[in-house]
Image (cartoon, rainbow, N blue to C red):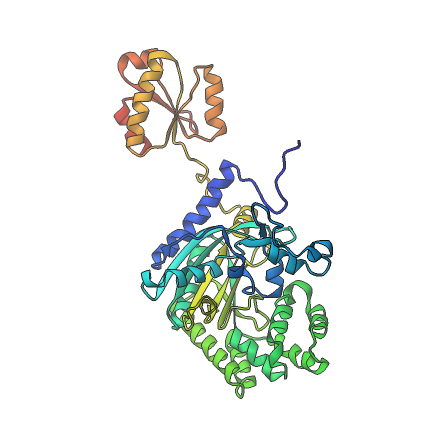
Length: 453
């Protein structure tokens, strides 16, 4: 059998894991700096938890897990014999669980289940993999990590301002130049009302969210296919193409939506967020994008998306405000807002821009060569002292030619090699060699520890 892995998944070598852990550690450190606490949820959720939360297209991308045991027991035999056009009904009978699609819906379920244990507002972060039955392509995987931070139990727009500051901090630390795009679901609802299609808000958001990917003509065609009138599509087009500075776009939207209550409220929320961010300062570019919808039905307020400026790739961070998500789990009236960093796309961006530091892949600081017998025994004793001092140390396990052991150290970019031969053993010392400069010195274990620290 030829070994392989499923499409849309990846293996990661030790060098790649060092880079990925650098991303996770950077994001985690910013989460903690802003007062977020960690949680974890299971990889699998009940399908009833996941279905209906991500829109029609999102539901299609859920990985469903076949029931264990006799999975056909109780299944409608007519469906089995004639499944064409009824796969949704058949899947509902065959599958009770699914792999999580994101971390936000499981978090909402977590909040409701643990409500009596949580102090509101509750700020949590979560770094775990998610799965989507999408078509694999550049920057799009079926298994990938998300790094989420959410606040629930607060309506304050200060939360949105802080989340934008967190985004700015994370990408400044990673060295990635970004543009942060903003919109508001209330603005989209107001626009739908303005063009006379308030009941088509879902169809509108699903279509216009593809504007950057498929272009304006294809979006207009899809809107017509989804049942919007030609007049409504014509009225929508100039709204999607509003240009100018952020302030100019906000002013234009405020004029257009002045008589649409929900839309005007969305503009006011955007103004408050933009003013709050500008007062604190932002290194990233800030852009107002009326076409930004993110295609997720649970957003009710601000919508956030982040793009890398120097690499052609999809969104690397996204998020928004959701007022009603916990309501479907029996806890209405709890507002939340959050963001999600796409670690795998960030990893690809850092690789393309080669933004990793040179010493990132250096794990072991010193390798002790194995000279056999009493020499190896002394090496093990010194290694124990070094590890107690917090120095990552390794002993070559086999007594073999020195050239082979040195080649091993060089291949793994281990900066120092320690040698305890016959003469070193007699003096109770070791020879410490700098692999970069070639410099060697005979030192005691204590001196070596000071040098390496």
